Image (cartoon, rainbow, N blue to C red; front, side, top):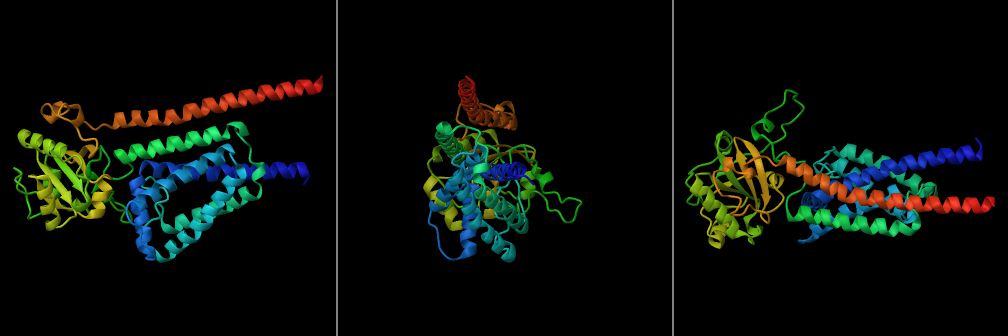
Length: 395
């Protein structure tokens, strides 16, 4: 094999590894940016499984955001060939830490899944380990022959792409922290028909999309006009039902109590059931009632199920005939101007899947279009300079 052929072959291998590793890091980073609270829960699971140290709030959430931004930015840098030595070294170090960790998880199975790709793609612990082994091999190749990585932009604009990526990642995760994840990969997404998702598939090796959704009525009720609720009652109701989801009332945000109570008043007046689903005990419910003046009824649901239903604490869900038609963070609850009549006449009573897709496309374009324009201008200027240098050398 000649030296030229060898270099060509190595270049193909290195840049193939570059595409595989960068795509994995970008995808892993983006799903974590979209659902930082989900990553926070997974970090808390890791800490509990290791039983070596504790993380006080808000450290797990801060770590989740930092990890998401790091993965996304490293993936983008690797794809564009930005700061090749630093980027490849950082990715190699990242995988040198996580590959042994995932091996330990695969052997002990102390955490159900690693959460590498959030709820978008759930892998078994062994699948995660072998995925990391492949990425680790690729990262060694990239670090070993990083100079063979083709740069897609010149060094003079690398900092601009890195800065833009950091700003975009910060905005995206901030948006999803303020509300609910803009892409909901969880089984309790808007448009989900819960009874169908709870149906056992014909394949005995598969589980339903939704399990452990058992509603147990609380003896600490408010003065709601509906005296009883359980899973069967909720899913059999062909009308609308408001569900205030609060995994732990003791730590629930009470900044928008007036808005929650106003929606409850609307529901009572219009004849729609309004319930709070929580994993807190009777003492936690009584404390919440004393704090908020809540008059709605309460029911118990498994805490993990509630955290899957919604990321904010509390959040509000609107159920119609067993289908989730709307979901709001406590920061983005509907106002009086949106609750002006019977729900079936209002836009918010229809699944907002089209608006979610439009918002997702807008967010995607806000990143990709400037990136494309910047890359095009950089390559255009580089081509002109190259052509001028070539012409001068001929002359």
